[in-house]
Image (cartoon, rainbow, N blue to C red; front, side, top):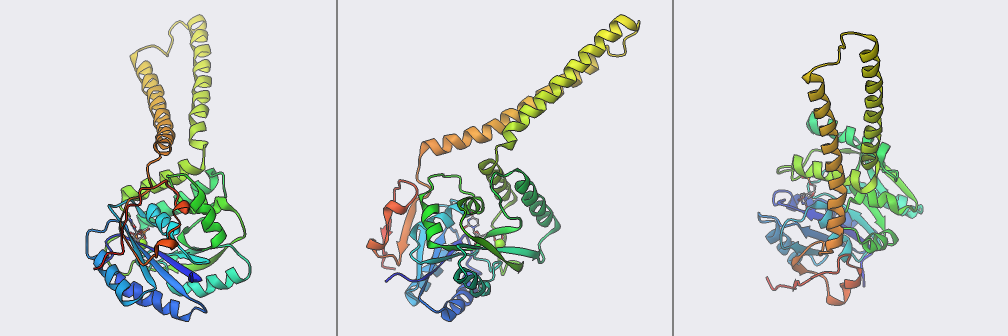
Length: 334
Ligand code: UDP
Ligand code: MG
């Protein structure tokens, strides 16, 4: 029998938070009206996280886990969880308890009202640095302006998904997975619940500035072609400036004896300007072409080193996005 509710939690070096995480999530699971499973995805942790996950699985059969052969990143970890999930109602949470599991009954209430996707929207970020708050604030608003789909502002990956939605997400072949965008793209009836984002329970932030920037660029490039068009617009603009300047120069040549537009500097400035516009345009092109390259290679999204808690018939390999090498060390005895 498949459980009705599934929790997916990506784990990267979270040994300090796992015990408390388990305590709070299992407390919520007890309160639910039906069976539940907790899928932990170990994203190549270097600390004792995997060992803790094994112990939890031994103690509590509702806990299952997948373990990647290396760090593949948060979005891929969640994707793997979605590939293996068995419930009808699926929750995605962060491991650090910034997404309070206690919000889940409220989300289920919305699901009962007929919503397929219920995403949690932060009203306030408690105790996060001004830089993170500011960049996040700006990014979500820029994305909203530029993206083809309506991606709600200030939402993370914390959400409830109906089985139907998960099946569609699993059938999407793309490897650059910006789940918040894909989630909006799917459609269906979506709604939000509001919450205040607590600070991380323990440990360091696992999203370094570089990872956050990569995620932001990924979101933009995957859901908007505006950056590509930008170079066309800038090109047109500088063409107009050039024509105006040409007319001006001819005018000065004919009507004023000492032209103000002579000399080396102006040429230098123009060369630098056009050069940088061209380089930036090539860079933007590169972002898109790089992504095409990634898609074309068709490598699996992740490699699994260990899985536990899933019986073989439950693993629907067809469902897995990447035509994969899932060479899993199945049901290790430790
Ligand atoms: N995470 C992951 N792989 C990574 C980085 C992060 O699975 O490479 C997980 C991490 O364990 C946590 C979640 O993603 O469960 C969010 O990470 P974090 O709290 O560091 O990010 P933030 O709250 O700043 O978005
Ligand atoms: Mg966090």
